[in-house]
Length: 72
Image (cartoon, rainbow, N blue to C red; front, side, top):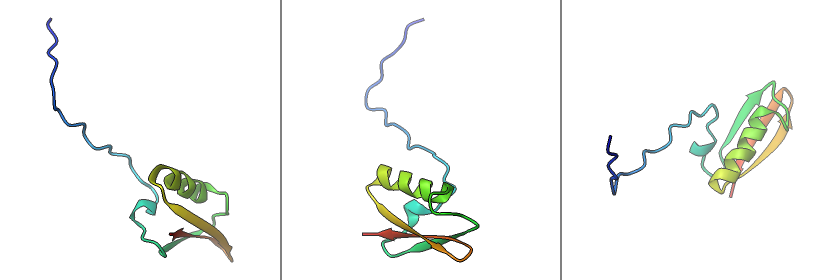
């Protein structure tokens, strides 16, 4: 079997499923996660998203959950 080398074949975009809407948020937008904590799964996902996409997020505890804002 002879393998053919091909040039200029574009790499397909990744299809990473997203559970959280962080990449779709504009500066000043926030999202509330009931029954979550600062340092919980949603907050860790925001931090990870921020590192991968050069973004900034801040999380604050509210009465029954956590709210995460996108910052400039």
